[in-house]
Image 1 (cartoon, helix red, strand yellow):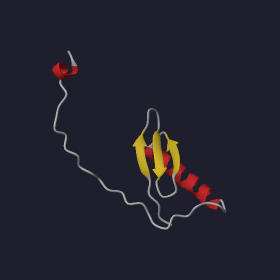
Image 2 (cartoon, one colour):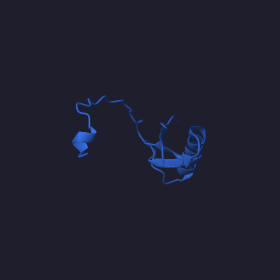
Image 3 (cartoon, one colour):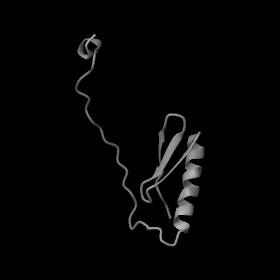
Image 4 (cartoon, helix red, strand yellow):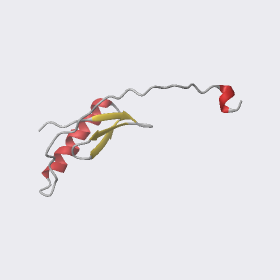
Length: 77
């Protein structure tokens, strides 16, 4: 079974999410966060009541135009 790992830098650690299973883990490095997520997903799937997804998640990158720039004057300096 192939699953997706989405990793984001948190305040002190990296947070890893598997969107297909809605499982989250963390680690001090990306490698550690992904390894911990893999273990968490394996443990989740060992549960006989675990919901197995019918399809995989679709991850897309979006481009959103940034049409304005905040300056010190605009902020109220």
